[in-house]
Amino acid sequence: MQREPLVYLDGEFVPKSQAKVSVYDHGLLYGDGVFEGIRAFDGYVFKLAEHIDRLYESARCIELDIPMTKDAMNETVIETLRRNDLGSAYIRLVVTRGVGDMGVNPVLCKKSTVFVIAEPMDTGFAKDPRVLSTVVASVRRDPVDSTSHEIKSLNYLNSVLAVLEANRAKVDYPIMLDHRGFVSEGSTMNIFIVKNGNVMTPSPSSGILHGITRARIIGLCRELKYSVVERDITPFELFTADEAFFTGTLLGLASVGDVNGKKIGSGGVGPVTRELYDHFKEIVSRPEEGTPVFRHVKARATRKK
Image (cartoon, rainbow, N blue to C red; front, side):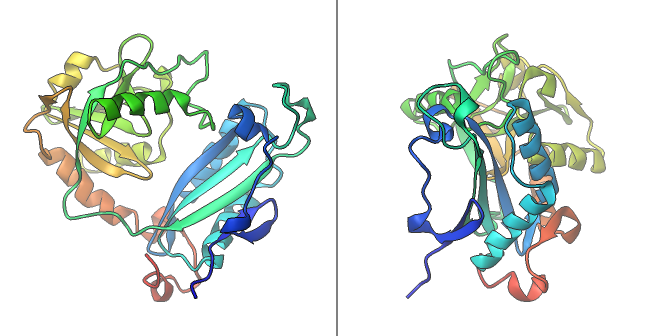
């Protein structure tokens, strides 16, 4: 009989069926918490330190105390993978405000809730990147002086509404604009466009999530000698781009084939997107890009993917 997966929950590893939080937890009642989605590839956790840093930055912005050090959190993620014998996985790390009362004021939440889930997932990189259909959603990203999406909080209702709109349009994903009407990001991904061989992506100052994969792709562009600029992008520039692509932890890198029924470039995978994809799918398994799960990674990494 296959062993039930284990979930880390507040200092213990418990079977998945027993991993439960209180209905009085403010993470459930109000979306009051932060999280990270992380990938492990072939025995290495990709950019784990950067994910942990972002988690603590998000928590700091909402005055949420995380009851362990960064080093301890790092080891907790690794141990969750080890306990489940996973070399390739998707990891969800969540910190909520904890149990309080039904009021909004978090003063009665005495201790944060921390849990880590790891699910098996293969590397997810086919020979060619996915080509996605999209629509520009009417739902706008919240401004930076509101519930800023720079904070990776548990409140994803803004994205959920945009995804519902994409579902009605029968496309894969939405593209969202900021409150000024400039291109912001996808529901759970950052976005890039390519014009005349130059790569452009919305600036972090517009309130987008500071994507870990986004940052690595920007670095990769520079390594490959592509000009890459972070700036405001208009819908016109998106519609008339030679190429466009999404980046994200779960998605990796995927091409945008069309927006609102309009083809972007050829409607397939452009040459810049393809080159970045081919390099990125090799980068994620490099030891220098990640944190090893097992002591003998090469011997263990192929056991589960």
